[in-house]
Image 1 (cartoon, rainbow, N blue to C red):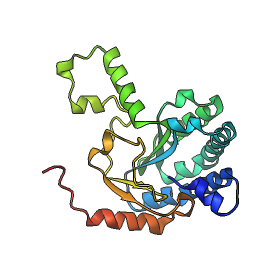
Image 2 (spheres, rainbow, N blue to C red):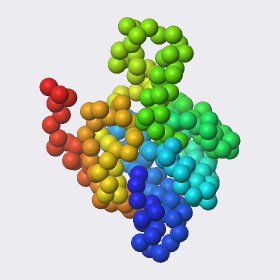
Image 3 (cartoon, helix red, strand yellow):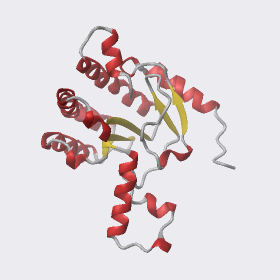
Image 4 (tube, rainbow, N blue to C red):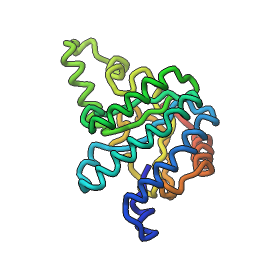
Length: 217
């Protein structure tokens, strides 16, 4: 979800205003994805690289995530959306950890859609964490294959993504779902995330529907 700060700058606003609007943009997309029968939606909320931003901006981002989770958990429960965090949540501030864990617990019985919140996430870090887990378990090299490796990823038990959408005009995946997205279709939207609406989601889904997926065959 890219383009929050550029959205704010274009309006002469501080960067945090873009993040506030970016949080607001999430709600209709989650609801719209669920209404369209999407089984798993993953949102790249905060990357491990984002720690390198200014201290005030990072603190504002954490505060926004904390308040957004607290304010929207009831609605997610009502929608039947199960929340799951993917990333190193244990490195986040305690209050943010508590809010997200509570949302995970309260929404755990949701069956309509899985919502992955990629928080303090990095595709490379995820692969390293999986390797560390495999080594700690003493798994023999000959017993390791793609399927068993996938069982140690943050997204274990979930299908691989069919479609990855990046907003904001940049054309790269920026360390997102590197293993899982090997055969995902990529759609790059010029729309800045705060302006991304259900019509833009439909445009991405229509583009996906036009693709021929061969999976290397």
